[in-house]
Structure formats: C-alpha cells, structure tokens
Image (tube, rainbow, N blue to C red):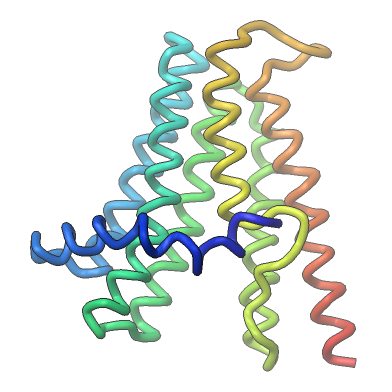
Length: 203
C-alpha cells in the first residue's frame, strides 16, 4: 500500500479543484455524490467494454481515476470550508463502498464472470471493513496492507487501458478477468493482514 500515504503531499494539485468547487457553491457532500456518479458511469463503461467495444475500457479507466481524485478532493474541500463532520465522513465512506461494489459488478457483468466478481467484491469490501472495524474497537482507522483503495483504483484504471491495448486472452482469461482474480486474492489477503494487525494490537 503506497498511494494512500501520498495524500498529504498532493495538496498543491488538489487546491485548484477545491477552489473551483467552492466558487461553484458545492460542498463536500455534493462532491462525494459526484464521485459516486463517476463510479456508476465507470461500471457501465466496463460493461460496454466487455460486451460492445473495447474503447469503453479506456473511458472506464478515466472515470475510475476521476472517482479516486474526487475522493481526495471532497475531504480537502470539507476542511477548507470548515464543515468536516462525522456525518460527512459517514456519507463519504458509505458512497466509497457502494462505488467499489458497483465498479467490480460492472467489470464482472461485462466479462460474464460472476463467481470471480463475487470473490473480488467480497475481498474489496472486507478490506475496507477491517480498516474501519479496527477503529470501532478502539484503534486508529487502518489504512495499511498490501493494497489500499487508492492503489486499487490506480490498478483498475491501468488495467482498463491495458484491456484496450492488449485484447485477447492470457492463460484462458482476459486482462479484465485477471483483474478480478487480482482483486479477489489481494483483497482478502489485505483484509487478513489488517485483521492480524488489529488482533495483535488488542491483545
């Protein structure tokens, strides 16, 4: 997990977006909803990439990266406007989880790989659940592990581009199907890694 650690260092790039949304009269909750809309659109694009035209994979990649970027912007906007709150944090995390689910569902539907999709989405959700459950039992929220959300979105975006550039199957699976395998395996390993950390910290 690397990209989540870079959040404190991207303020210079985030600031123009924060000022723009602020001037437009949008608050962080609205940006969180916009980010979720990007995820829904990305899911549709992944589906079309698997069923219609592979160029949609590139569109999906851009939308996934937009979702991740807006997820950084909404928190910075909340701090800039002085409206950061537990309610806003709750909304952000709920929409992030639904965004994760809908993107993986779109990928799986486009591939017709629903079992792989189930394995991938449970890995993704359990990773996030273990991060917040640690906080619920008195620890700090856990962002560590093999792959955090920022890393995952970057990888999904990269694979979207690769799926267009490298059509065809590899080892009996397409590039996008291999992405589902990766999300399933790494997701569950990261969840177990976070569980082990929290368990040891509570002993």
